[in-house]
Length: 117
Length: 471
Ligand SMILES: Cc1cc2nc3c(=O)[nH]c(=O)nc-3n(C[C@H](O)[C@H](O)[C@H](O)COP(=O)(O)OP(=O)(O)OC[C@H]3O[C@@H](n4cnc5c(N)ncnc54)[C@H](O)[C@@H]3O)c2cc1C
Ligand code: SF4
Image 1 (cartoon, helix red, strand yellow):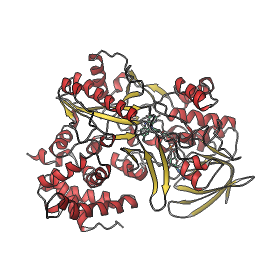
Image 2 (cartoon, protein in one colour; image 1 turned 135 degrees about the vertical axis):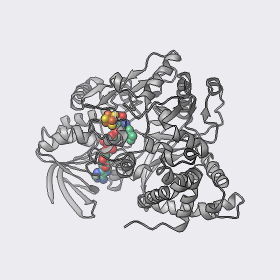
Image 3 (spheres, chains in turn green, purple; image 1 turned 180 degrees about the horizontal axis):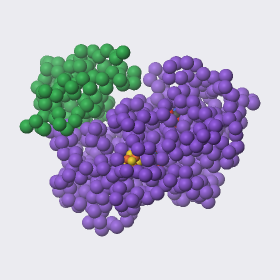
Image 4 (cartoon, helix red, strand yellow; image 1 turned 120 degrees about the horizontal axis):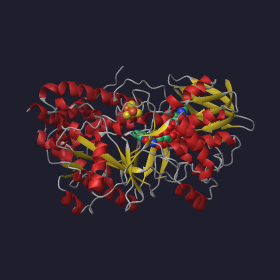
């Protein structure tokens, strides 16, 4: 039986997928990404859910957005991701990696937005 | 309860070779292995999520975040390694003698190196199987005036160059221990008890008791006269500490070296399909960077997205053009050290602090790899850094770029070769016997007392064969 995922986990994964993936491939990519999080070793599964909560509800506030992460524009969401990725402060890099990894592992070149244009 | 002459924990480089060597002297030998026999026809993602410990999440934390992958399968990390083989460098053996008073000579290890050449079918990569990304790097080196790249020695038989050695060789061509050693061990009556994790060890006067559990949660108990712990550098110290084995258990887990490593990717204007051929085919030593070893690497397309230090359009561009991408890696003979601990409720935690010397060497090694690919005609290269410009398309710009603001925490680094956490002279003696114990030996990467500067499997295997002969 697969483990449950909180709605905020699904929402953040969906948003990050939207940044990279053409609309008609999003469902497949997010489905694969959900399965990856569900299959994490328990401690990473647990950490990931907490992390996705922070991303969905708290982190946008720190960037001055009164919005959930999943409701930001692609540009705003990517700005947050890139800021965390480019920081020298390790815990933030760790947080952003946990958001990105399930989606990145589900990407194939042909589903990317750029490939569709 | 089953009784054996010898029990061995772990079936990787150390455990399998110890078992093979000991079989000449002892009748009943059992290997306990946490993992299972690998399935060969799977995707790289499957290998990452099923064979890599904690799905590849294990990392060294300190002033940098450094992934430290190891394998959990029959064959241990040899199942996911690149198959590259180096003898222990003479200078390192000398270093052990001089600074750690370890009484081992190159001449003593030499017969084991020869034996391993035969057992693992070690041979140089032939020109036709060198991947195009490796060849391009060689071209760049030649343009920069270096003629001294060399084909690497590898443990392989009838390799077809399918390019996925670190994600389980689909052809069983790579001579990981599950292919080359354990079938011989089984044929001679040895036992491999898979999917079984040893958790508790009790040393008594005339025997050692092992307690563990199977994947399904069933408890097991075994007894042996002699125990060889070969769970790998990240696991063996935890077992020894937890069970307070020997007299120096408090020292286990310290002095971790990992060969911190970086890789640079290059994008060409024409297709390369670097996934064809042997990904780690060529090596190179730069005269100005004696602590660095350069070796080919290539991540299969399915996992490319996680190794690129990019996001947004830049990431998409590299992913879409991955058939035009080449890559090469560098590892440092580290002077930095870390430690391995297990914390209640969390489990394994690895501390590692990259010192300035290693950091600067690696940073310059990455710059050099970028320059080499640009000299070979790459359109652009991406260096494994974040928070600073990391894509370059101009040779002079990269050559003169000021990377001084860069910190270790901004590296995209890996450490593929954890060593040293039960080092000879500190936790075990020259004969790999645990100090203060009569019946327990250690034979894996953890006993290698210092950073080698070269890929370690042959050193680990040679020390295991030597132990088997001396026991
Ligand atoms: C991606 C990658 C590429 C590499 N490439 C090369 C290369 O090209 N050349 C080279 O020389 N080296 C390479 N290495 C490193 C090399 O493979 C390892 O250093 C070597 O295999 C370590 O041997 P070991 O015996 O210490 O441990 P391992 O080979 O890791 O074996 C330890 C085994 O013990 C088992 N175990 C642990 N704890 C328990 C327990 N409590 N109960 C039961 N079983 C247990 C584990 O599941 C594992 O199977 C590479 C490593 C990686 C990750
Ligand atoms: S290149 Fe392919 S066939 Fe050769 S050893 Fe590696 S995975 Fe096996």
